[in-house]
Length: 383
Image (cartoon, rainbow, N blue to C red; front, side, top):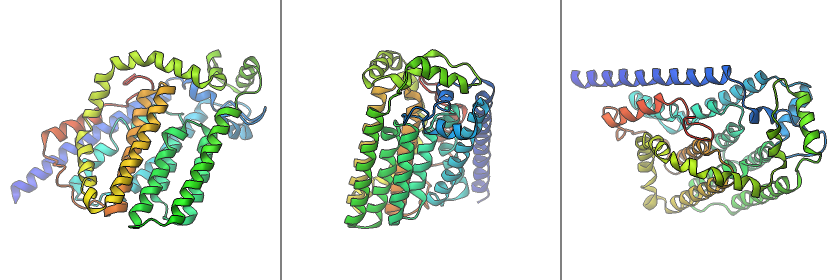
């Protein structure tokens, strides 16, 4: 008994050390975001407004215009950190609801799920991007009571996401509605038709809104006038190229993204290594999903279908845009939320995690590796 306690104490010390490495990595990326200039592409989204009519990617900038005529880069940083703090609080609630295991196992899970460079470190590294807002809505879809009013709340929040940035149609809305569907199927052996109709109708309305924003809300003034309006509200330089986002077509963006694909292919070993250090937690979660194939076949098939739709959304995203490193993190977050929602909805919280052996050297090495990487990146990994 004494040797078991001693081994457990030693393992806890190891994972507390990994936790300390995580805290240092978080500090590095936070300081980096604070001392380096705010990226132009994040800043300009707070400078646009609806002065000349409805414009895509313009809602946040319009809200800024209600309160200030000049936008400080520090206001954008504070906004980003507050959003990440809200997301972290929601994630901790989901973690507590999903995993009710022994303290040492909780520590191991926490090192992976909060220390991963794909998750919250990547939100901080991409401070000012709107991805974290999609993550917040997705987590609310996991946490809020499964009642009819939930569909209206989530539908309204999803519409706001599209007004903020229409890319949410492929990176977070499939996950948000996939979570709702998984919860409905998990709660009832035969899902209620009314629930499915409400989910379907909401998706149709969101699809119509997305098409409208994509096709009918381009900038309505010449690029020179548009840039002049941005610079009147700016406190840091705004390069000419930043107007491109409001004047480009899907064909132009796709051509640019495909032109950058060879550089991404050269970095496949880096992407592979980042995925590899997450194999212990991926395998752990897969072992909770696999038994549903026989125990809850409808729930299992629904999960696979939703996961396929989410992956397809990211495939489309990465054909049109080129932020592969950033979207690898978003994809990981989406799949994690889907899996946790499925586990809780279909089988209840995880109460046994002894297959994630805290004494296993490979697991310790993977957790330490994940802790040491500050964040994945935006366009290219580790850049």
